[in-house]
Amino acid sequence: MIINHPLLGPCDAQEFTYLGDARLIDRPDGMAAGAEAAFFDYDYLRDNPAGLHRELWFHEQGDRSWLVVTRNTVTHEITNVELARDVARNSGRSA
Amino acid sequence: MRYSGFRVIKEALTGHKGWTPAWRDPQPKPKYDIIIIGGGGHGLATAYYLAKEFRQSNIAVIEKGWIGGGNVGRNTTIIRSNYMLDGNEPFYEFSLKLWEGLEQDFNYNAMVSQRGILNLIHSDAQRDAYIRRGNAMMLNGADAELLSAEQVRREYPFLNFNDARFPIKGGLAQRRGGTVRHDAVAWGYARGADSLGVDIIQNCEVTGFRIENGQCLGVETSRGFIGAGKVGVAVAGNSSRVMAQAGMRLPIESHVLQAFVSEGLKPVLPGVITFGAGHFYCSQSDKGGLVFGGDIDGYNSYAQRGNLAVVEDVIEGGMALFPGLGRVRLLRMWGGVMDMSMDGSPIIDRTHIDGLYFNGGWCYGGFKATPASGWCFAHLLTTDTPHPTAAAYRFDRFEKGRMIDEKGMGAQPNLH
Ligand SMILES: Cc1cc2nc3c(=O)[nH]c(=O)nc-3n(C[C@H](O)[C@H](O)[C@H](O)COP(=O)(O)OP(=O)(O)OC[C@H]3O[C@@H](n4cnc5c(N)ncnc54)[C@H](O)[C@@H]3O)c2cc1C
Image (cartoon, rainbow over all chains, first blue to last red; front, side, top):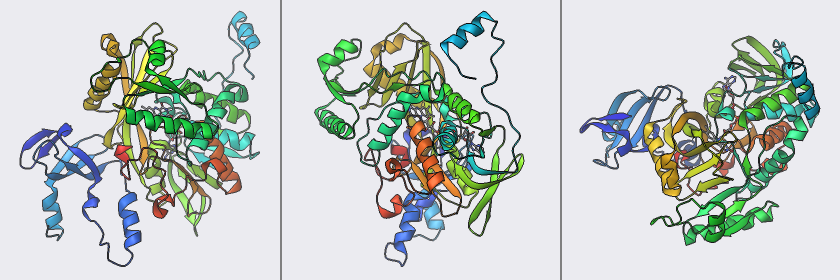
C-alpha cells in the first residue's frame, strides 16, 4: 500500500506503524465524571467497519508524523490522508 | 450412513454407487428453538454438541455461503494446548482431549495427526519462559517436554542452529499437539449434526436481528425472517459486523492473516515447528506441501487477501530458521479475516439482550479450539451458565481489568 503523505508525497506503508481507529485522538478527560466508563469505551470498544475507516498511522521510519488515513478495509483503497495534527486542531484541540 | 473400512471396500467393488450426501439441504423452518449463525468449525461443533451432548432439538445452523468456506478452511491446521494462563490452559487442554476422540465420536476421518509441536528456544530468557510454560501445562494435565539443542538436532537436523542472532538453544515440545485436516472438521461436524436432526441452511445470510423489549426473537435473513428461542453467533472475522446489527460494539478489530503452501516434497518435517523469536510456524501436510505462516498484516482489514510486505517478512523468518526453504517453490498463499480481540483471548458469553449469545474473538488461534468452543458454547446456550473451562471468557473482563493477555502485549490487537 502507498500512503500519500501530505508533506512528503507517496510513501510505502511499510515505513509506518499502525495504531488503529482515528477516534483514539479524542482521549477522554480522566478527571471528568464518568471517566471510568469513558476509558473502557476508548481503550477497548471499536466500530470495526467493513468499508471506509479513518485510522492513525505513524511515520516511524520517515518524518515521525502522525497521519489520519481514510482507507477502505475491504479494498485497501486509500482516499484521504491528513496530518493528525491538523485533524486535532480542527476539532478544537490546541496541541 | 456409517463409514467403515468394510464400507469403503464394498463401495470400491460396486462402483461407488452407494454413497449418499453427507448432509441434507433443508428449507428453513419458520421457527427454531436454537439458531446458530455461522457454519464454520465453531458453529457446526456447537450445533453437534447441542444435539448430542446437551439433548437439544429443533436447531438450525445458518451460513451465508457454503459451510467450511470461512477460516475453518483457510487456516494452517495446528492444534496444541501449550498455553500458560489459568483462564486458557484448562480450556485448550479440554479441546485437545476432544480432538483425540473426535473421529470415533463423529465417525468421520478428520486426519487428526498428533505429530507433535516444537517451540524452538533461541535465548536464555526464552528458555526460562518456556520452562515456566511447560510447568503450567503439566499442572493442568497437559504434556510438555524440554529438549536440549542436541535433542532438537536429532529430530530436525536441517534447521539453522548457528544463526548469529537467534541460535537454536533447545525447544519445548508438546508431543500430543499436531495438525488436523481442516475442511474435514467442518464436514464431520456438519454430517454429525445433520444426522442428529440439525438443519444446516447454506447460502442464507443473516442481515439483522428482531429484538423486542430486550429479547431476541429471531433473525432477518436473505431468505426471510426465521424465528428463534435462542440465537448463538459464531461468525469468526465478521463478529463486529454481525453484532453491530444488534446494536453492540465489541472489543474486537478485524485483521488479515496469511497462510502459505509450497510444492509437494518428500517427508522432511516430522512435526510442527515454531520460531518464536521471529514468528514463523511450519508443518508438512500429508500431501507433502510445507504449510506455513507468521504475523498478521496488522491493520484493520476485511479483504481475504494480504499484502506482499508480509509475505516477505514471513519468508525471511522461515529462511532464518530453515535455510533449505529457499530452494522450495511457493505454490499458494491466501488470507483469512480474523476478529482480533483486545487481549488476544476469545469471548464466549451471553449478551445484555435476552436470547442472544456470542462466541468470537478467536484471533488467529481458534482452529485448535473448535471442539471445546463448540462444547462450551452449547453448554452456555443450554444452561445459561458458562462451562467451567470457559468461565474466564466473559465480555466484562475488559471493564473489570481481568484480561487474559497470554502474550503480555497489552490492549492492542495488532500486537497479539
Ligand atoms: C491463515 C490462517 C491461519 C490460521 N492458523 C491457525 C492454526 O494453525 N491453528 C489454530 O488454532 N487457528 C488458526 N487460525 C484461526 C482459526 O482458523 C479461526 O480462529 C477459527 O477457524 C474461527 O472459527 P470458525 O472456524 O468457526 O470460523 P469460520 O470458518 O470463519 O466460520 C464463520 C462463518 O460465519 C459465516 N458468516 C459470517 N457472517 C455471516 C452472516 N451474516 N450470516 C451467516 N453466516 C455468516 C461465514 O461465512 C463463515 O463461514 C488461522 C486463521 C487463518 C486465517
